[in-house]
Amino acid sequence: MSTAPNFFESVYEVAALIPYGRVTSYGAIARYLSAPRSARMVGWAMNNCNGREDIPAHRVVNRKGMLTGKFHFEGTNLMQQLLEAEGIKVKDNQIVDFETLFWDPSKELL
Image: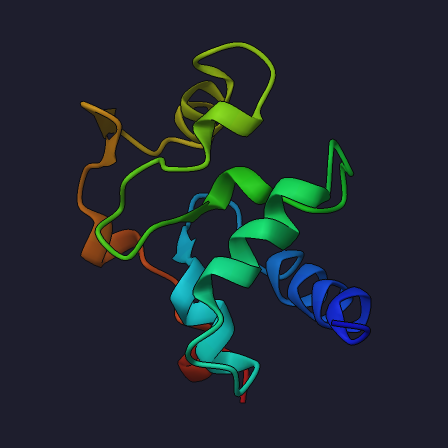
């Protein structure tokens, strides 16, 4: 597990590139990093970035567009509020128009 910090930093580098008003998934970041079975580890990295303002962790959701990481933000609705401030609609803890707003680093970062 000694590679975790390096992996986490790689996750943060990708997450920092997610454009304003767009979202991606834990799995998409893991696939981009050639670790397709590491979506959960990407989630742990997002949980560990603890308020780093350079990491838009609120833009990383699960593969269905659900705000599964919302409990790791201060307050119960901060993740949703941050997304809505970027114009992203959320209904019942799920991104509305997820497919349209989805940012795939494997396609966007060539």
